[in-house]
Length: 290
Image 1 (cartoon, helix red, strand yellow):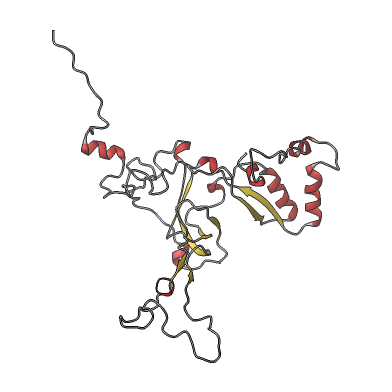
Image 2 (tube, rainbow, N blue to C red):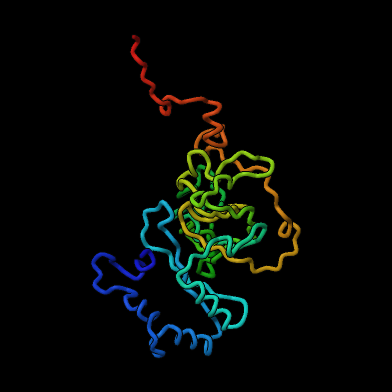
């Protein structure tokens, strides 16, 4: 249903239903109307095979009902192999560990955090003018010569900052973790830190919450706010650098609270040191004396 909502402007008031005849084409034995006819034509005439994939937003604690739809190109093998691979994965869930591996380099594509209209000092780092400057301080003193009578594109100007489409390359994957909802209760444990704990810090990630499903731990920062979707792709480079090809062994993953000072790595450790708290302690009624 979350994928069908993408094709509607108003899900509740729509009179026409998307994909109402989709199941009939799968069950149909008529060679002119079956889906197999379209797949055979793709194998015969097409040189590029792409599939439509959508996200599963119901697994996240977001106020969103529509899925994110993306067209992905299938690479590797002949056209028939690509079509068969796409057919085998029709309406199937593709997990993270099926695509990416640990110590692999990936590229991250997304939209940066938007800041609206900004001045030249904040936007380009122009030096602020002295106090006694005429007609303002936070601006460019000279934007160019009288002639040619136009402003060059190299001159810093006021305008939009952020909310740009960007691609960051060569991000190394440190860990491909299983989800806590699937029964993994130690996806943040390492060989040097054997404490049983999950990747979600105490109190959750700020502005996001808990990570209950499979995750990727990537070196470096990622563009955009916490809940904005990003696209991760295989690296397009041939890596020969030592830092790109080395094997990473994590020694410690900090799961302390990111909201306060973060003294404890888990709730179990907190209760062991702090003891029962007033708001969590059980109320024990005293029995009346005989």
